[in-house]
Amino acid sequence: DAGVIQSPRHEVTEMGQEVTLRCKPISGHNSLFWYRQTMMRGLELLIYFNNNVPIDDSGMPEDRFSAKMPNASFSTLKIQPSEPRDSAVYFCASSPSTGDGNTIYFGEGSWLTVV
Amino acid sequence: GQNIDQPTEMTATEGAIVQINCTYQTSGFNGLFWYQQHAGEAPTFLSYNVLDGLEEKGRFSSFLSRSKGYSYLLLKELQMKDSASYLCAYNSNYQLIWGAGTKLIIKP
Image (cartoon, rainbow over all chains, first blue to last red; front, top):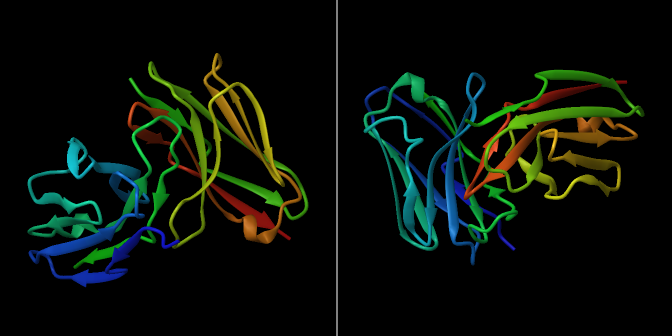
């Protein structure tokens, strides 16, 4: 079975540019998570969707960040305008349901560098 | 509040045993996960404990004490490929609360 698929794997962009990260969750999983990981702050949950509906976006840093999930098989995380402090690895992850104990499966990550 | 702690870094010798501890404080707890993350890669699932006690999976075992807010990951017969970060996370409602990770360095 295909795992969580993310694109792009690597992106280098200039400050002020728009960045769009894409994610295809594992088929049949109805929970989707966007995480950001940095050396300083570790793994941070940005937003969580359940059945395509955003449930908790309290981790989204500011208005420059937005996320959508138009259908069960696709989600995007957009940063506009990007800033150097946004440089990080962005992981998308999915889980079978919101039930306790459901393992979260991570994509390979999108490595973003904003210069 | 929510708090989870684990050591930043540990060093061990190939073939030896190492125990990575994780402590947490939370009012809502529904189980504890351990994930392994190699440098430049995504975290991958290792274990899940919801009841007190030891769960063994080959060379890796995970222990949980809910009353003490404590878990550990035990790695036996260490191999060089075990060099990675190990993240603990507890399950609170719909999300996982993550520790900062323990970087494990294996020396020959």
